Image 1 (tube, rainbow, N blue to C red):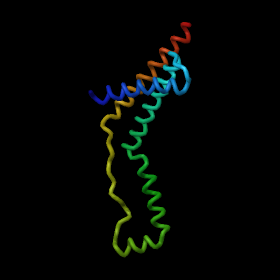
Image 2: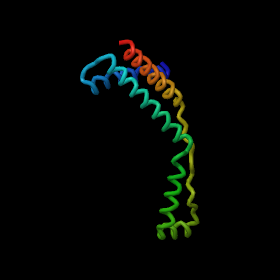
Image 3: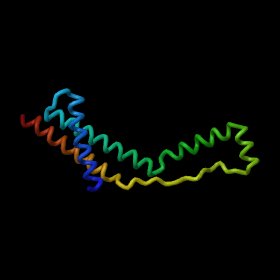
Image 4: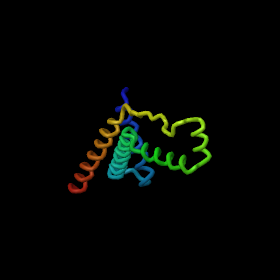
Length: 123
């Protein structure tokens, strides 16, 4: 089984459980609401992965580290005596299955939105 199928089945089963937890009674409309919420969560996970891969937070971390390193005189003297640099080694993080989160999230969101709208307008 590939990752996308496993993610799809896990998300589908979580949506069933979530519909019971949120609404105390299982209905088709409650399940589509939970499915939409799971889809939004998967899209948010994809977005966070993109931010981490693009090294969005590294600028904040480096500037905070530089600020505290320059304000702490004791560490600054130790660094100068050891001739150490303030720059740390950076690495690039890659997530191999990030597009699966986006595809399944969009499928759940758009599918549940269309079916919920059809149920509302046709009944």
